[in-house]
Image 1 (tube, rainbow, N blue to C red):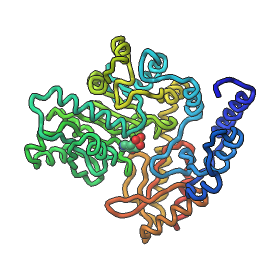
Image 2 (cartoon, rainbow, N blue to C red; image 1 turned 90 degrees about the horizontal axis):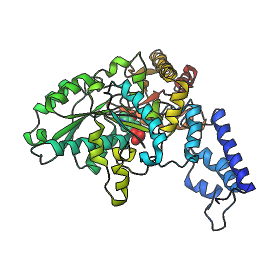
Image 3 (tube, helix red, strand yellow; image 1 turned 90 degrees about the vertical axis):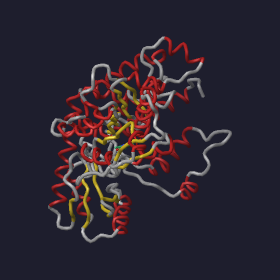
Image 4 (tube, rainbow, N blue to C red; image 1 turned 135 degrees about the vertical axis):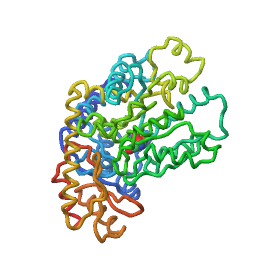
Length: 452
Ligand SMILES: *Cc1c(COP(=O)(O)O)cnc(C)c1O
């Protein structure tokens, strides 16, 4: 298995060829298949003798790959799509081949140096100070969790009196993973602040909610989670107002920009993010709108020493590493072993330049906003919210939830698009999310026409 035989060498060539073919062509959309069907077509693959690479590749290509949806298909408009650049995806193969243990400077200095430059670019977009820094983690869920763990650790270390119960403020539009992590992993009280007419968390609402809370809960608040680009609506919270409240009370301001943070690089919408520079921590998922392959979240602390204090793991065999400190990515989040998952993003950003990234993000914004105009001009549809970023949410007049479900299923079956139902103000509707520069207005028009 580890020797380079002629057969293995040929297999490597073949797999490399499949990768490049995938990257050079428009992918099929694909779609899920019942497990019973896969059991019939694929059967048992793990055997003592092995099936041989030829047979396994055949099973993969014929039955398994096609049962996965290509998130970079231009018609993938549901959830948050992916759109890795070709260079980022290609370099990801190299990262896999290179066996880099990306958690310590000792083992991955070159990779960490490169990743940190990509993090620095993100930090500069947000207007963070020169000593800001962090790490690439698996996704927004883990990035948010790691930031909030650091925030509470900091509160524990610095407060004279500890509250009975810790609490964090957020809204109903905050990503579901945040409240989930707070409750199930951190055992923290979640305080819901009502959003404004657009669903935004504002400084004023935060202040009003605070005033109405019992003293015990007030004292427990250590952080506020602001969202820069909500997942369902693409709305940016009132970061300036939230920042002012946080400053007044000494709360940690965390900004979840998993989806929307990428638009910091788009001059046309940059002003929406004013106030982000006050944040204590910030995340953005390059695997969403910064054209990186899965999985990749940039987590940045204003003061990385706080993140390190909270997350450094102590073990005898790790001491040699910790003493000789440079920048150990393992020390800044809830993880230890780490793939150098920021490298594909770094490679593409370094090769193409940041201007190409800004242009590509602007292009998706234009497509989304033009798509919103198409919706507004369609008799059978109703636009539910003017898009701020690249989420277009709308309803089909007269449709019941089952109509959306049937339509969504048909679009996937016909391999046209992946568009799924969602809810807005309790009512079932649907939405487009455009993060792929390859998605065209024609793609959106086709979906709109399919709802007639
Ligand atoms: C996607 C998303 C998350 C979760 O990120 P994962 O990478 O899926 O873990 C968190 N917050 C927001 C705003 C998101 O859009």
